[in-house]
Every structure is written in C-alpha cells, then in structure tokens.
Length: 189
Image 1 (tube, rainbow, N blue to C red):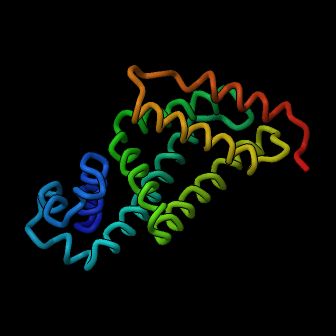
Image 2: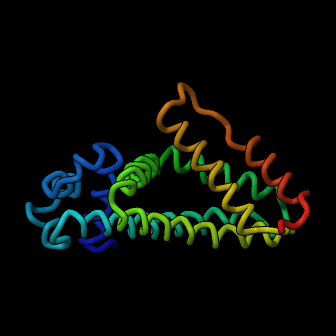
C-alpha cells in the first residue's frame, strides 16, 4: 500500500500532467489525492520541494516501468527489444500519459530553474545507463552513445505524439532503423 507521501506525489504528477506547472498548487494536489487540506504542504514545505519530489517520484516510476518492460525482451534479440521499447512508448502515451506530460512540463521548467534541469538530467542519465546495457548485450560498439541517440528519438517521438500529432503513430519502424544502424555501425572514436 502506498504511503501518504506517495499518494500526494502520484496526485502531484497527475495535476502537473493535466494542468501544467501553474496548476500545481497545494490545494489542487490535496483535491486530486483526496486528502485533507494541508496534507501536501505538510510533506513539502515549499513549491520547490514539491517540484523536486515530483522529479524524484517520476524517476522512480519510470525506472520501475522500464525494468518491467525490459523483462519482456529476451537478451540477444534485437526484434524483442524493438517490441519492448514500442510497448514502453505505448504505455507512456496511454496509461502513463499524464506522467509524460508532467515530464515535459518539468523539462521546460528546467530551462529557467537549474535545480529542476539537473534533477531531470540525472533521471535521464540513469535511464540511459539502464538501457545501454541492453544495447551492449546486442553488440553495440558504443552503447552509451547509441542509447543517447535512441532516447533523443524516443523523446522527440513522444513529444510530437503528445503535443501535435493528430493520430497515433507506430514507433516501431523508427526504433528498428536506429537499432539496425547501431548494431551494424563500426565503433565510435
């Protein structure tokens, strides 16, 4: 059973992902969490601490989901990895859509707030390190570099689908092209 703090953070992510940073108020989070007024401010004494808590919470949720999806991709099978990554994208645009929107709201906030940018950067680096192990298993000569490029593609795909796409698109072809190029490329100098 989630703690009260986790309930507040889950609600804060939903509020941020649906109402943006301006809508992320203590009152909105308390309402979304179904908790008594003042609960959010008891856990997070400032808006900055709430935002930092949301970043850390997103990192935890993303790592949990990433590992769950990774378990479905057998080692050494590039096509299974393509399908697993496509499932991650589907999850991020479906059930976890509010988390994806919250992440982009935080990314934009990071332009003006170095602490948010640094936390978001740490979260991304953590995910890249986790995922680059898959690419190394598949024989990528530069798994960290290739994973960074893969994440750049996925971030662009997700952002486009979330913000501007009139209809859902399939991420598999792009993922397949990138993995094919990575696994066929010579070592990076």
